[in-house]
Structures are given as C-alpha cells and as structure tokens.
Length: 132
Image (cartoon, rainbow, N blue to C red; front, side, top):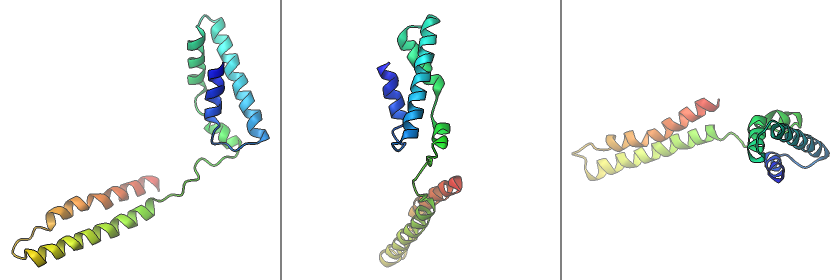
C-alpha cells in the first residue's frame, strides 16, 4: 500500500499544509485502501487492484474546490503575449522593408518573409481567443 501513499501525496502536493488537508488526505487514502481490499477479495492480484483503484479514483479537482484551493495562480499572459508578438512582428517587417528598399530597391522581396513573420501574432491571437 506504499504505492497508494505515494500516489495520494503526489495528488495533494500543490495543496498547502493544514489540518483540513491532512484530514481529507487520510480519508482518501483510507477509501483507496478499502477499494484495493475489496478488489483483492474479488480475485484481483494486489498490483492490478491498486492500479484499478487509482484509475477509478481519478483526479482531485473537486477536493481542491472543497479545500478552497485556486485551480491556477498563474497570471494570464496571453494578452501581453499577443501585444508583444504584434509589436515584434511590426519591427521585424519594418526591418525587412528598410533592408529591401535600401539595398535592393529594384526588387521587391520583403513581402515573402512578411508572410512567415505574421504567423507569430496570428498564433498568439488564436491562443488569446481560446483563453478568453
């Protein structure tokens, strides 16, 4: 049952320490152990019983909500990334235009790398739309 301990501790690693966490952690561990014992009594070997109990338990997102743990403290940077990609692309395209007209004004070639550079802000736009 050491593997169950490791699994439960891994699930709760993001949860801050506290009495409530320990109580729920012990309850989850006890439920998993009971499930393993039931599966063993039904004829499964110990390894299969542990695997099945872990898979059937799933994740702990509902328990995190009960513990009032925010799902993600990570700041949403997609809007900043979009603005950065637009400005960066504009500067790179401006550089291509300058190089084109300064060194080879008889041939217009800056358009071709412009299409490649525009994929960057386009990708950031779709990521921003997805996260909105």
